[in-house]
Image (cartoon, rainbow, N blue to C red; front, side):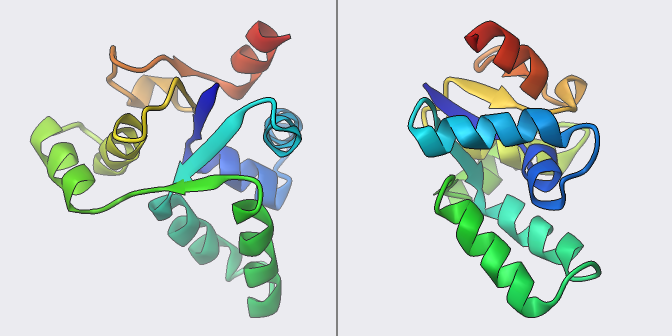
Length: 136
C-alpha cells in the first residue's frame, strides 16, 4: 500500500510531538518493515528543516533528514504539481501542493491530522490513528 505522509505526520515523528508521535512512530515502523510504502513531498523536508533549525543543530538536522529519507521516499514537487495546485485554488495552497504531489505519485491514501484541509474525493484522506486502526 502506497501511503503519503502529510508534513504534520513527519514533524510529529521527527520531533516526537506528544501525543501524536505514537501513531507517527507506528507508521514509520510499518514503512521501515516494508508493510507499507510511505512517501512525503520534497516540500515536507524543506518545512521540517526550517522547523528543526530552532530546536537542534545543523548536524542533527541533516542526521534527521537522512534517517527519514532512508524510511520514506520523496515524491516530486515540480512544475506539474505546482500548476495543478494553482489550478485547484484550494483555501490552503500548501495542502493543494501536497495533494498534487501525492496524486501524481499514485498514492493509495494520504495520512494527515488535518483531514478537513484536503478537498479530495480522488484519494482517501485518513488520520494516522484511523489508518492504523483499519490496518490492524
